[in-house]
Length: 150
Image 1 (cartoon, rainbow, N blue to C red):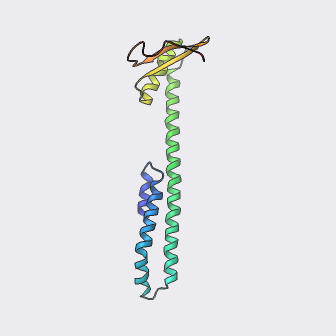
Image 2: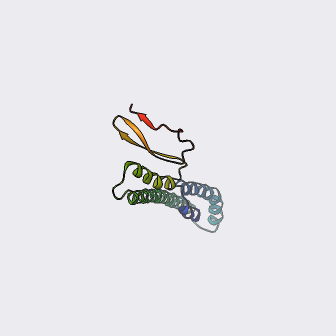
Image 3: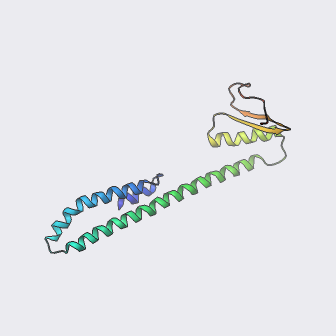
């Protein structure tokens, strides 16, 4: 059971399942020797097999619960990360700003947050997209200043 429980601190949802499967196989392989040695001491063989089966069942149920726990913990972490980004973006976009300063504020927030290398912001102007801000663009002409719609 200990390997399954220790897997709960990992960020891989299938880790507890694999640990339970390996532990169950080990239980089946090694457990058979224990059954015969304890059976010689007067214990009922059927009860010992039932005990092993129940132990494996509990181990697999624990692995399923650990799997669901890890998945939900990762989902909560992802949601918190997204909400933190939205809060940072809202703080940067407060007040009246021109389209160019909005684009710069967006890039100033998103590029470090997403660990992006390059960023561009386009604004819709009539029937075309007009570049209003750029971040770490290697060449000023490396991206088009406007993109026609369609």
